[in-house]
Image (cartoon, rainbow, N blue to C red; front, top):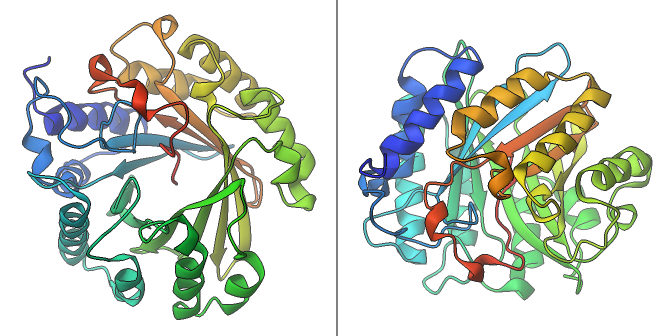
Length: 352
């Protein structure tokens, strides 16, 4: 197994997940590998080329399955495109080129992408990443794309300013004025994302981490009770000192929506307990636990009782017609090389 390349290993896991969710054809896998960049050819016998913040063991890929009652699960991938010799400036250019190439292949407009890209490009970037891409797959049509920029590319203190400018450029003036305030000691703006593709209502999203705060102090009042209960079931009552909760604010023609992301892997002894907690949430929401279990089996190379981290996050959105629970699974390509410096808390995972 370990004589495989990173791209082969990741693509094989994607193929297994696609079978579970009713996807057919090879286009998604081809585009997935293209988005990975040159690092896809790197043998797994070599250590990670870059300490990717996508996952704890630095695998630059994470998969997720979004579940809604009476709907088929939606499969997604988060990818950090990487060149042969990674550093933050080179990573940004490699990711930008990969995004442009795939968008051109699919015939997607990059107008929104081009409106804000220069804000997040600098000759002396800071932070844990430069530019990421998401692939949102569909059974009967080409995938959509998501692009993730780093608001802290010029430092944490500049993040609110960069996000405000990006929102203004996209015509989201009310969001810029009402939702972006100066950085607070317990809040970090982590990701700024846009949708690219055939989205019915393209979204602009802001992800923020809230360190050591209870869920009740993070969640909008109208959703406080159910989302706080979700966080308690997944991660316990807090405070969330090991890794913070993430709040995603989404802006589109459909209005403003919120998603709560709970870092389950930091608050369980192993993935067997994480599975039990996920089952509890899914049972309450009337969701498909069998497909979820098959998805864990499709990516796991170890017993669930041996460690935590295979299931990294759960997220819950309540703004749609029916609740949407998203489960984030890692492929642990470098699990034997998992390093403690990514802890006690890193921004890893959970962008969808």
